[in-house]
Image (cartoon, rainbow, N blue to C red; front, side, top):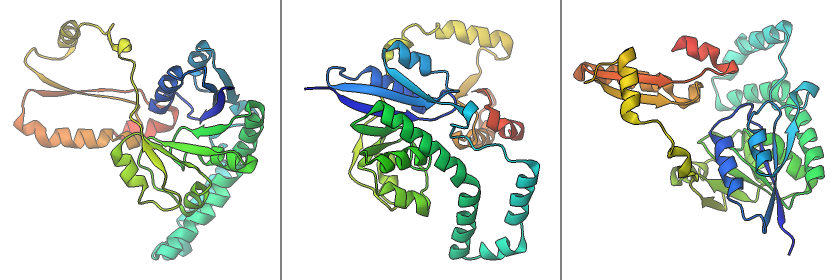
Length: 288
């Protein structure tokens, strides 16, 4: 029996949790039963890791307009949208649920839709080349819109791998009805998505897999502690660490506020925030 071809789509512009989890997922596939094809953003440096596994990798090239990231608006366009959002008419509309939906709808079709449509067209071309039996969208519905649209256009079955709790717009709820189901990374994510409307079932809870061998070669924690102590910490300091990408939804600001609340009761408490700002999060870094 020939192997089932699965197209995995994740257009994250850089390496993050979804990409790493996808890598472990396809790495563990029974290749006699499943033949993966991975579609990534050309800016994602993890593509070579997938290729090292002998997996076919197709990319969406930002340099030719084939990208999930919106094109940079001109100053005139930004001013136009800013003026529209701050206008008295928009303010009045936001006072009602219907008005809020209308403002969002105008913004969606004016700013998001053109790029979304181009990306879906490109993904359709790549899916034709990949010829999958199933399309696996590796993130929440609002992030996977272009992939869902492409699969729907070609009549291919598609599922979403829900890795976060993200709200669905009216368009997302309509678009989700073309999906065949969801993989959720936790019971909490499954409970949340079941309340969002649109298609919410069937769903399967599959926890993220880890290759524990990657942690066997970690540096000695006592040596690491001594290195940090030499820099800024005292031997009796109580250290809390926060490690992750510096993007607002990761909640670093919440971590710092919580730290401020407990610090008066723990005078030796110290925090290490280990992050690297992304290109689109420099304002957030400055805010912190």
